Length: 116
Length: 111
Image (tube, each protein chain N blue to C red):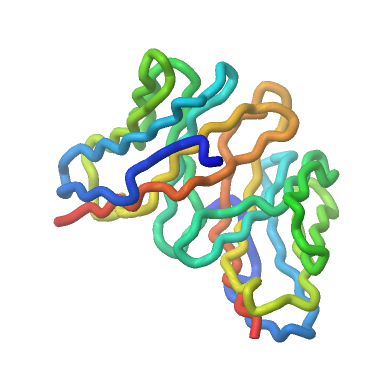
């Protein structure tokens, strides 16, 4: 079990669908992250939120839209995805404050997304 | 460009120590060395991190050379459950703190 909960665990969607991935943590962390991981590849950073504000966008296509409604929740809204977007989407959090800037990231177990 | 270089794969016998090397010859003074691992079908799991000094916790030990250009992660008594991809990551802290994963080392612990 992890302290970062991601739902759903699996998602199959068509290219015209709109869906959302959800991530939740109750550790009081103020930084939250989305990573994408293709099969047999390392995770790749997509977005970072710090204190509920988007601080890093790694040039992700606009069909991926992140949202951080509060410090415990992180969403990733998906629209008009392509089959090559099929991957494991990982959420992570870290304290993100003061001297804890280098503190470890806590990862969820991801949502496995298949785009048909 | 990758900041770290790791072997693609390693094998270890169950019960023996696993020593995973990492080269980070371009590391700068404010950058930490982090180790994470990813067991199949799970999210990455933090193991240990350090700046200059050697570190030890309940999972592993981290040995950093004096010039900080390389490090070794040591799992003292490897078990089958330690089979995973191990990532060595070099990053600084700060307001844009993030982790950039390299290719990692697939450690296979054999019975």
